[in-house]
Length: 428
Ligand SMILES: *Cc1c(COP(=O)(O)O)cnc(C)c1O
View (cartoon, rainbow, N blue to C red):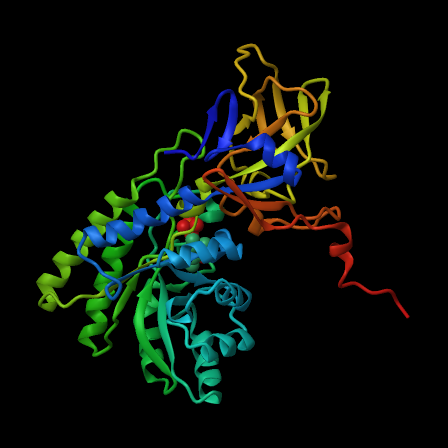
């Protein structure tokens, strides 16, 4: 169920009318729903339980890069989440949010020595390694610290996730992961290094997947590889399927998380029964978008209406620096007026921001009954919204709030212009 809906003609986040949020916190503002975040996380946790898993045999590692506000991380941590990070900075966020490093996995193709040191010093659960040079670097850094680094190899199963090329990551010509054909040799290298502990295997084939078939196909390939490794005496203790489940942006019908996990666990159980005498393997997930995407909206105010020669523009106070997805992926986001409208003959607008780029648009060709000063909600903006924002055009980042029933909590202040150049200095 959506936690953003009209009541008495006004769009609400849970029990809070969005116009009061604009009044109290200004615009643009990201608004997240605590109930939605909770519900979306529980879809994973409950499906693990329903399929006979407990905390020792499954772990949901929320992908921090999709929405990294420490209030969001803190909430998910209380719900039992682990975390998938892609930088040292994200590890510090998890720690600031009260998360345990023992539930942190570290993904990414370009980990620096400093990031490795930080993660090793906190004894994170696992490094998801993506290349042989990375294995050697990690081995060296672990040696310096007198530690052994637990690793999983991110294997590229070469399956087509059938999603946007920019968010497809499991195909051959991709910078991510170790090629399937090279995985065995890479595991042999890992197993030979004195400060590396082989503990798992992982993949992440793409994002905004509506169907789970490519994920299940990827798991088949990982299972095959685990059997080959076992025959060589290399034993992996966890299988990490990555994230990638999509959300409804525009009449999309993503697979239900519970259905996907049932099929996945059935496959894994049958395999373990047939080949490993039912010995369990821990299963990890790295969902981002499917937890936060539809738990958030971007609230923005119409500044001007402009009638061009061939197009009408609604110029709003949010821009590509606030929500980059349309400019970057031509992504579609729903646009709803905060005041409910019913005009069937409303003019068609491009919703654009004030940034000096033609690529600065948030939505195109939308029929909207609006006038200057009206508030709009850009829907499905909880994932890869705030985290991808920038200060282009010296625009401070938006405020962020969480609604919880009738309450609104400010979780990030709006950036002031002075914040933006505080780290800069003049020449002597
Ligand atoms: C971004 C990312 C995720 C999360 O993907 P979603 O599509 O948001 O679920 C998971 N794992 C890795 C390695 C990622 O880079």
